[in-house]
Length: 485
Image (cartoon, rainbow, N blue to C red; front, side, top):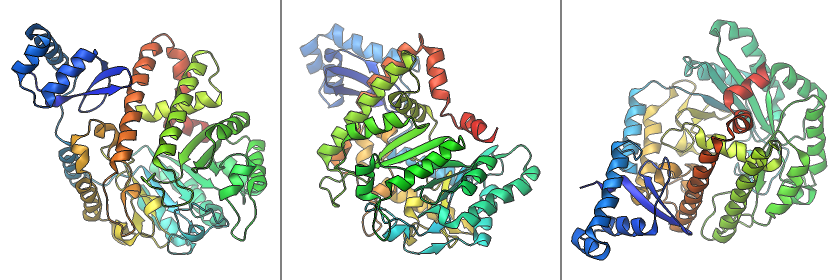
């Protein structure tokens, strides 16, 4: 008899889909097939299901599923979410440390006092100050040493506000220019995220000359942006940010914009504003982990969060339509391209690679899984004297799995991956389960994504060239060529 543990059946609105435990693709089925499989998976005796639907119908359904498994359309699972995670930890233990992306927090200080800053007061991350040149150089050389077999590595200068420490940024970029010949064909892509206030002609010329990517934080039109992103001493910042963006445009640097959305912001207002701006790359991220009941004045509640995701999904659909209709540079089309490219990118077991192929360095040289965890002593995974401590990384992974038991019975876990480390910790820096109200939203979002993706993949056969041109622009190697030549 077919092993129904290898599959899940999902109902979303009027659609019924069958997915394997790896959640790699959706197979559309009828409501009757959904009912039969659901009852059998719930433990209903075969003869009772047979009495209700007829032996011939039940056998036909099970034989078809078996055929899908034999053809490898439905791929067999290699264990529960927990078991897969433990295998990933074992694999990490046995393989050499191999880092793709290093974040250098060159400044744990900021000239702004954003109301939603996760780095504490003005981005200090519990330790105010600037990274010294010597420390930064040691971070950079260590990063190169743990990515020595990679053809490409990425260095992200972050803060606080990284431009408060431009001398260190400049030193590291120029250091690479001096030593890169000894690394053969290896490429290093430098980028940073800034609030834009400190951009000057001299700085922008330097970024242009050495291919440093720049992402600017801009939360929308003036009335939206100035609600949360204010000067440390008070006062608006929108006009100054736009001046910095215009300076980037003047030197023809690709402009990447990061928007943080809070609960009171109208999605349509953001959409209309950014559609007019025509930035090269633009992402809108929710401000913080959406709890069942908002803990902070800017934080999304469950209802608003669901509405926000629904609006984003509508943008994806409009964006795909724009690409097909030869309007690949519309705001919606770019949003679709970014989202589609991310969905196709190969990922590890844990959601973003934090602590594995992504690490962050604090100004004191301590190493953390990601920039959001800098300053959390419990999440230190190494230092510049001893490098990354695998046992500490494994402990974080293990704690995450222990707090993800609900994922073992969730069909969406293979794609959701239990979400982000930072989002899962409480005030005592302990891992916690994702609230079930949120899990319902993630399942709903993934179900609709699978259905939409099925449609897109089918239609792509007729629009291959248009899709390729629209999506390749956000491929890492292609973007590196654009920046570095």
